[in-house]
View (cartoon, rainbow, N blue to C red):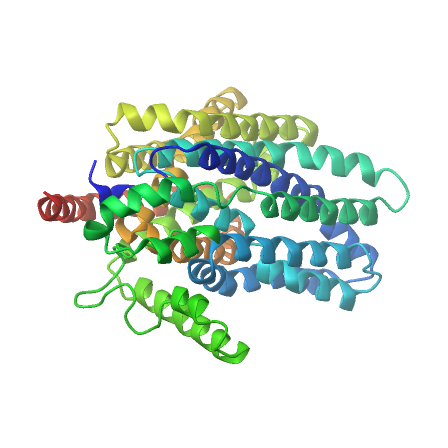
Amino acid sequence: MDARERGPFFQKPRGRTRIIRCVYVVGFMDLFGVSMIIPLLSHHVKALGASPTVAGIVGATYGILQLFSSTIVGSWSDVVGRRYSLLTCLLLSAVGYGLLGMSSSIALFVLARIPVGLFKHSLSICRALLSDLVSESERPLVMGHFNAASSVGFILGPVVGGYLTEHEGGFYTSSFTCAIIFLTNAGLVWMLPWSEPLIHLNGNHARNNASKGCHYHECSESVCNGSHASSHGRVSPAGTGPDAGAPDTRRVVLGGRKASLLQRAWRQLSSVASKIHTVASSDMWDLFLMRLLMALAIMLYHSNFSLAMEERFSLKPKVTGYLISYSSTLGALAGFLVGPVTQLYGNNMPALLLHSTILTCSLILLYAAAPSVSQVLLTSTFFAISTTIGRTCITDLELHRGGVQASGTLIGAGQSVTAVGRVLAPLLSGLAQEFSPCGPPSLGVILALAAVGLMLIRIPKWDRKGLRKESRTD
């Protein structure tokens, strides 16, 4: 494998393995804590005396903040390093959930949601960190395991949250428990062996400085912060280098004693703006559009699932809950299938994404036309697997085409695109339900077909770009 395709820890030192395992734990605990709170938010807002309209506006606040902050925080993690950005996000999220535990009015509730909406990007930074730590061939396997660990936390959290809610002051107890979980995660991140992989870097980068254009001291500063800021990123328009338009943050670190705090902040802001501009001007619109189309299709599938089961098959909410739990569990376990399936495809991620998208589209169609609950159960089984593989594929393709240097920016931009889907999906679902309970999934089929058509048009261009890259690295 070419040196430019490898992360700085390609030879798997002990420190890298420990960091990866700890990141899995952070992902599990993150969604475990969050999922304790999510089912309780609407009930708490109602208990505070909010009308349905006010409750809807308050609920939308988090999504809107996430929409605008995802890309910025992801790019900021590329600039200052994964360690400090992840610690900041975890600590400020803990503050937000702590304030939520003290919210006795609508105003305080909204105030508590602001830091969470702005800085609850710990999972995105964890994914960027994992992409820094592994090679491209290992990335789908590691990402799949991380998604599986996170999903297990999301499944178990509501059980604990529901139990705590049965006691007096259960919502406040759940909120403070969530805040403690995020503080624990911050402590775990702080204690990670960030400096151990430098033993490997000293030899590896000394051999590859000429090909990578990366000086050992500069790379060491970056890795100590948890980021891989090598200078071989691929997200750049023609004639623009990865560092064009903004000074390298590592120089800020080296000259930090002379620079004022305001100058540092300005340089970091300039670097963040430069990275976002580089991604925005790159030729990756097709991947982001595909992400949006499939996000909308999947959200429309889930949007009225409980109501549709009741209206179409007279299914009780309890049985529907079992069906949803079954599908969620399969989705978590499917994370462990990503690595073997990727190897089966010979790491041909475009082909795997195309096939998983076609399968997802077919399953949504079968669900919309299902004559019985048994067929819904069958479609839910394979739907959980296909969507898990598809999400991993689209993230891996974004990182492959964009380059690991801007992994935080790319993952953040992807989350912003998904946030747009979260804003649009309820509106589209409501309009489609005016016609039929099967309206939302039927609309999802149309959007998924559009994604398939887009892939059929763009994949040949992706292949030609890949051939040109291979010819340059030979």
